[in-house]
Image (cartoon, rainbow over all chains, first blue to last red; front, side, top):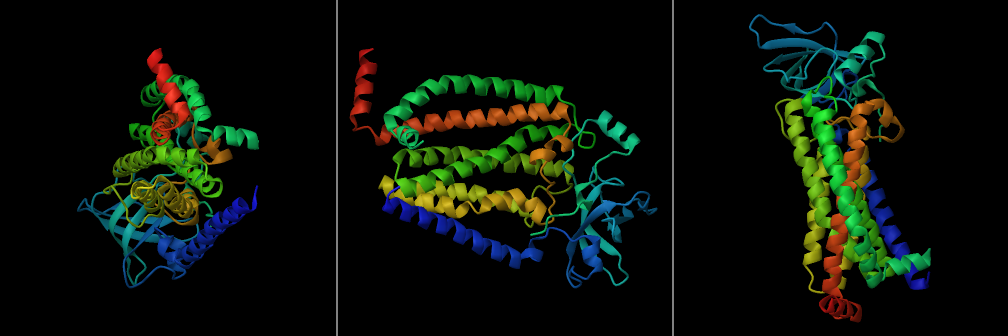
Amino acid sequence: MNAVRRRRLLLVSALVIGVGVAVTLALMAFRQNLMYYYTPTDVHEGKAPSTRSFRTGGLVKQGSLHRDPDGVTVRFTITDLKQEMIVLYRGILPDLFREGQGIIANGRVGPNGVFTAKDVLAKHDENYMPPEVAASLKKSGAMPQHEMVKEKNKL
Amino acid sequence: MWVWFHKLGSPPYFYRLSSRLLPWLAVATLISFVVGTIWGLFYAPSDYQQADTSRIMYIHVPAAMFSMSIYMVIAAAGAVTLIWRIKLADLVAAASAPIGASYTFIALITGSLWGRTMWGDTYWEWTDPRLMSELILFFLYLGYMALNAAFEDRRRAARAAAVLALVGVVNIPIIHYSVEWWTSLHQGSTTRGMQFAATIYPSMRYPLYLMMLAFAFFYAQLMFKNTRCLLLESERNNSWVKEMVTQHDAA
């Protein structure tokens, strides 16, 4: 490799590394703003905004879904297996909504700690399997954990 | 290795090599697409939670995967263009960009339709890191193509576009790790190296592999065809093109 090419190689490497470092620093500075949702633990530790609306997400706790007599108001508990939060929602739930499923709710948390949601989305996880396999895994208790309660490799 | 590198960079050699490869690629693309699509859409089992909607992954996952791989090809070719000034590298990059942009577009659209049925009442979430970084990839492709077309002089266009491609390459790890570094509505990767086996059942995994092959073959085929067109256009005054045309006319 001659001198001119070596110089160009250094310039190209410097460009890519420079942009990489700058973007990494910027992303680390904006880390909290890039979070799509806060976990109940984040809310408990006061990391979530208290004056404006935000998203929270977790698994719907087994047996916690309660429907009001009006038929459209639901309340349920979401959990990240460390902290829990009660969510109150009035509206139509997504098809994938069920106990044990991951959900993301957008709304505000009141002074009583109850989260009032404006909308609720279901979050699917990365596990794909046919119904028979899911049934047998459930029976043997080997169902993989939903990704929402796994530890994340935080930046 | 350097001999091979320079040989591949020679236009007549590349042209002859691609002539031999193209029929095989066409057959491979056709077989893998037909078998993969029928297998994935009709014979593979549906998911226990998503029912038949899960079949969107046979298009969405390969399209999204190769939207990133093709960008890496363009960035690598851009580096070769800037350092070694090999014209063929620039042509490969220019030929790949519209294919990569199309794959990105397919990934965005299929993802949006899947999201509408699975997530609930939304087609698009502006604040989701995975969705946004993939959208930025789409704009990078468009910007790359626009910059390539903005210069009369091919060599200037090649250098300017290569710099853009290299600056944009920082987005690729962001797309890939967006679902791990931040919380996201998008699920984690099913296709993550060793864990792949655990997260998707074999009867759904094999048609997915086949569709990945199909998207790869299809890209290779289109890339060779596009590059050949660009090559003939830029080399039209060179002797090997003239010889080839006269031979073709004589035959």
